[in-house]
Length: 324
Length: 277
Image (cartoon, chains in turn brown, red):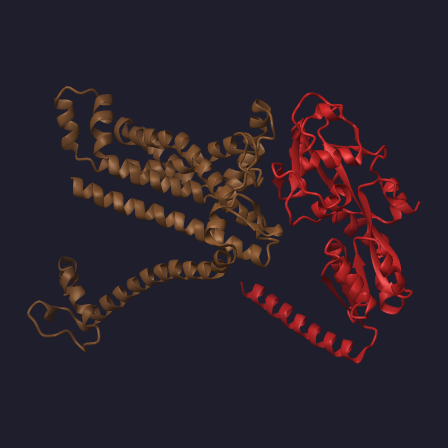
């Protein structure tokens, strides 16, 4: 009897949805299909569905509350110094009443672009290897390694960069070893798992028929990958890269340890610099008044940048669906 | 977990009980409660000493607050607090307030370079020019033809504040300098990079770096206490009139070997006794 009930719920999920819509009804309305569901099963289903709804609501409320809080805390700075002055001013001397974050925006973009140039090809290459080249045994070895890369806490990357990488760079190129170059190397490795796993998914979702057709036409493996598979998975790869950009621009802990934190646009790639995220870490301990408000203003800018990334992914995905 | 909760409950209850007792006694004006306000630089010493003092004398209460040296001097002179702590000397207009100075520790900042750096001494104005960014090459101060790698502290640092006052005289730091959030980081970066220069409290200088001679004076407890080492200051406890009662007990406790050799050194300062000899 109980097997019979489970089968009913498994095979007809639509029915359950209809049920929750009338959750306040004391018992299921009469009907040939519904009469086989007991009241207990019906209640359990309803409770579970509402539980999942609650989970989704908490996530959405989290985003909403953070945005509201950061917005309310940071908004006064736009009113005080003006949006143009805040975004376009190149002097971040908050203790002297100068709140321009253009330098920080440029530095964040410089860090992100460099990390992408180094890490993007590395990640896409890894994904191609995992999806198209590697033998199953090798794949089982490499994939967990890449996934583990994503699991390493960013402070460990930063510590590694500060203690190991920085002195080597200082010795090879002069300077103190703090700067864009060191940050690029660290971020490039950090964004590999994000881009690689999503690119691999995109490549795997290309139907095998397409591969077979390509080989049937006499194409080599390299020709198949470069002319057929990568173009076919293009949209997924672009999405992956944008997510990687978000990871790179939002990374804080690893960057603050190797960036050197000078509030200027660096004169070279081996000179210290400060970004949108690291300024919050560096200034928060002692900021008060307008300075603190300005840091929330920086947080708003970061929030908007990541919203733009998410929006870009949505638009591109939709565009891709329309194309195919 | 249970034990932890019980411990937390006991701790909270004790704290509440202490607060109540403290309020009651200070209200009655008896000598079992002492208020110490002033310098944030001195906070680590004053606070740890107060905690240790209260462990030894459970019936006494010492409240410590970091509000800045000027506010500390102001509050002790108008009677709001019993001891005003200060990381600077009295200004001329403050000398007439009848405050008695008890020197409790020495704060000296060493300018440090890599062990491989041939430069061993600089003048105060050279150090100021280096940190302001006007001197950019070691050649200009008698070193090798290498760009200077400036290492600065973050703005929350008391050492940075003191260094800025003592050396730059309020001028601006070179904004292109690397900004590091800790004494240990400054020391290890300078220890590794031959071109680097930084500053840390004298108490934290070790064999991995070289402390420069400034204006011909080597930084050590004797020169600091004698007042000849230029990048240094004395940390004071001020009382209105000669310290008496609980204030005297507390100051004597701070000056005791136990606090001077452990707490004062841990906070990166030098014991006042080092210079007394």
